[in-house]
Amino acid sequence: MLLLPMAADAQRYIDQFAVEHLLNIQAENLDALPEVYYEYYVFDEPRKNTVIARAAMYRELGEGDMELGRKRSQLVELINRTSLGQLALGDTVIVPTEFEVDFRAYSPFPRYYPGARNEDKLFIIHKEVQAFAAYEYGVLQRWGIINTGDPEEYPTPNGRFNFNWKEEYRVSSLSPPDEDWEMYWVFNFHDARGIHIHQYPMPTGGPTSRGCVRMIDTDAEWVYNWADAWTTSTGRTDVRSRQGRLLEPGSMVLVLGDDPEGDPNLFDYGRRYPVLNRVTLPQDPYDVEPGTNQQRITDRWRSSR
Image: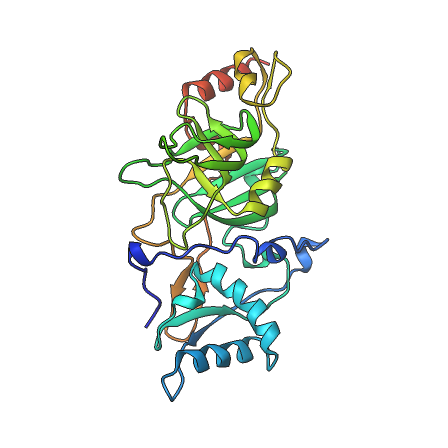
């Protein structure tokens, strides 16, 4: 059977630093990336021993090399948004036909986005697949997994935004009295509600935060250094920059898609093999409705220039 979501009390988390090397592989030529296909792998073995089954999986992933198989299993965990340590005998996971390549080869987002060819930087948050994409002039620069807000209590709002202020380290204002919720690589895109992207522990499942967007550490740091903050009359880029007058908005942010029912799913499960679901993006980013009054003011300001 396909791997089912775990109960809340058995929730696992992404080992963010173990997967860092996978996410930082960067090919010089996007067109040279291989076409990746996917196959089913049934976690099982005749003696019904999970230790032996896991060893057999590592050997198959590594083509006989156990250590290589362990490293490749980290990619399998990311693609399936699971921990292989939670597999039960008889579970099925999806494995790619290519390893050790630029992570963009596995992207559900298009490698080229014609509608964004005039945008120097565009950041997309897609709630249905729980993933982000970063484009420069319509060319995919990076993508990765995320956790958005709990749709029942703290949904991440859809719409078109811009990045505002940023801070490398911040303690959440929602922290309980006896606990600091520490966030790193914080980049705000909804100042009124205090919604940011940032690094934080990431469950293997779907939406879980209080409206903000959780990211893997190396992804959050990359976006922090890549995207442009707003420019205000204070000359600052941190939270105190909002005390000034807006001179230039930051990089555009689109929040798209509906919250998934349960865990996010990147694949169509065919009888013979799984097929990656491709994300469809709006023809023009400006077709997406503004997400805040601030954005509407920015639109009027931009159109008058």
